[in-house]
Length: 101
Image 1 (cartoon, rainbow, N blue to C red):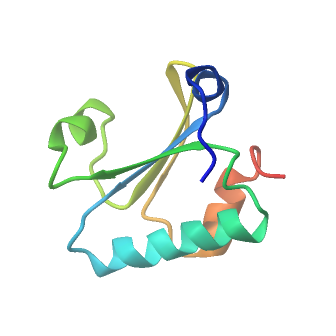
Image 2: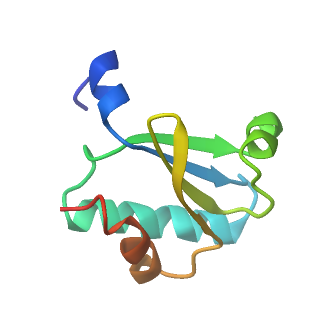
C-alpha cells in the first residue's frame, strides 16, 4: 500500500465508514464498498477510515450517526455527504459518484 503524506490527506476527501463488528449487514456493506472502489480503481481517491461503534461510540455521537452502517464523506472540515444503511453496491456507487473516476 502506498503511503500518503499529511499534505495528501488534507487534499483528499475522507471517507468514513461507521459500522458494527457484529452486524452481518455491515459486513455486506463493507464488501459492497470494496467492490465499488475496486471496480473503478478508486482506492487512492479517498483517505479511508473505518470506525467500529464498539470501539469509538464517541465518534458516532460526534458525527450524529444513529444507524450503522453509515458512510460519510468529509471535505476540509465539513461533512459533504452522508449515506445511512446502504442496500447495494449500486447505491454506494451513486452516492460516491461525484468523487469517483
